[in-house]
Image (cartoon, rainbow, N blue to C red; front, side, top):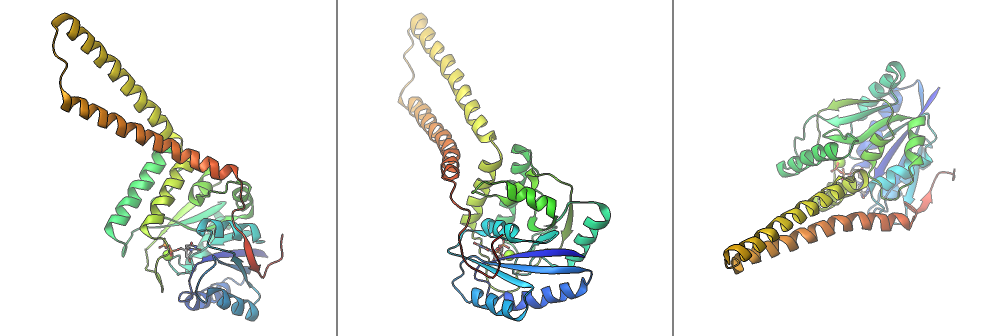
Length: 312
Ligand code: UDP
Ligand code: MG
């Protein structure tokens, strides 16, 4: 009998959990051929999430919980769940029912019958999301695919079912600044993508404001591509050549034709442009340096304060 672990990262989800649990129960009921373990990860919520988890665990010991000492972000929650999981197959699912539990049986069947290592879900549309956000997301996924060799499907969710072998591979990547979508792609394995109609969160608000979405994008690019650094070098090189040619022009026109050097406005433009570019390039290098700095400290990815699970 296969065991499936379901990991659910939760941050202030007291409104969603009462909707989630019956759905999960229904799901487990419909998959009698499997054994289940649900690991609820509390990302140090300020509301009643942890207490609810404890209650659920008391009533039904298929439900386990892990609670962090502070908010370490969703990617750390997923890592904690993967590391604690004991199933032959492991699923990651959001608490807000935006990842439909009812497609999990199809995911499982696909892995078992079609020989995939992983089945991942993506949203076919982004109905209900602000236009600007979906447009930016689309640009990000395009860019990401171009400049790293690791494809991230547009609309990709973190919702997926993976084999134990793949989970072990994902855990073996020890980086502390984790961009999970990139990691899932980096480890390889055969992945099948299945689409589903976007749905609104069942209750509560999104925990990923625009600001963290930007930080998330930068983390992804810096973590999985060095193309921006190459671009910075190329920019430097181009400007170096432009400078040489312009210098030659000035020298020649001065010595041959005694032309006055053109005035203040053009000089100002060149200087401002040059300075702007210098800082831009420095900024790019800075992003990489910052990630290296944080990575070198090799701090733990999360700190567990309470848990119903035994340490592995
Ligand atoms: N989440 C988390 N830690 C965080 C932010 C979010 O564990 O710091 C969880 C959240 O409870 C939810 C999932 O990650 O189960 C996805 O978050 P959300 O629905 O806010 O993101 P969105 O679906 O809007 O991208
Ligand atoms: Mg959501």
